[in-house]
Length: 213
Image 1 (spheres, helix red, strand yellow):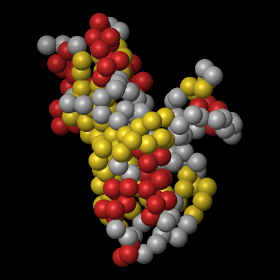
Image 2 (spheres, rainbow, N blue to C red):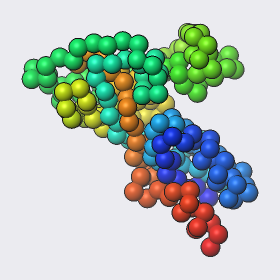
Image 3 (cartoon, rainbow, N blue to C red):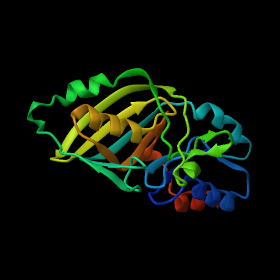
Image 4 (cartoon, one colour):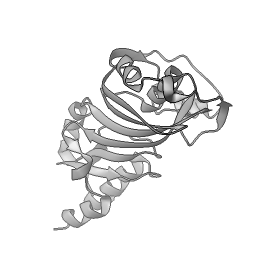
């Protein structure tokens, strides 16, 4: 069976997989990780259904994120160390609709060093923690929808629909650059994976209740 599980923030995707494996006592796989600081939809396959995950992982995804402007971190999110500060411009002359439109379409995106992607068999974040940077070949992604909503003088909400493999942290940093400043992601929620939506997701506790019925 395929299950739409809600991953809370401050939990790794692997820890959720581990909990579901404990409950079901079967093989469990996921269709794409979420960073520990993020929350939202985590699609899991249990038993023989893990074979279906290779298709599900290719589904488009939607996210809602919050970007803190004026500060850049080494991880591109709130878990990192601030490595640069920059003044945030006056927003009166900025057309956020045009900025959003400029990111739409197929494009190449570089994988951040702080990520689970492997290069030569080693996960990038393990190298990043040792201050080692390696060449990463950009990957083709597609931004299908983007809306930027100003919350206050240094905070922006972004709503994104994108292809699989898109790093929202990188997108957030690029949006800040387009505005004329720097920024990093301070909150991220994955709201859908294909037809699997946040509204229909089950907490691990709720999943356990249903599994035992």
